[in-house]
Length: 179
Image: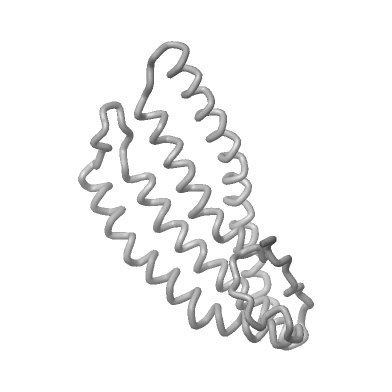
């Protein structure tokens, strides 16, 4: 179990790394957006490349941030019974949800999106907009984001199993979203 927990810590570090990049990209995206708007209104000039880089960064933030969100237990839940059951029952609900839903979906989505990236890479696909960017990087982010989410799912499953066996303690409580 200790080797699996070490693997889990490594996956967690990877998710945190990409999550922190995503946090800085939010700021950069805002600065680019504000700068682009100022230039457009001050000089009547706009660039599709600057608009597209914002979209690419947003895609990175969402896709690579999903694993970090799962790691810090801030993902979306359908809380029908989760909040009213015991800690052990929450661990079981999480483990079953990871095995039956998260891992199959994230793995399948990564697998499906990989050929889309490869085709874009091989064709040197470019945006159809004047001054647009190459497309393969954002398509790679889709595959990588789902793969990282699947890896983080494995990490969370390891932690849930370890908690169920009494090897570690983890916090399963979460803050319900405001209505």
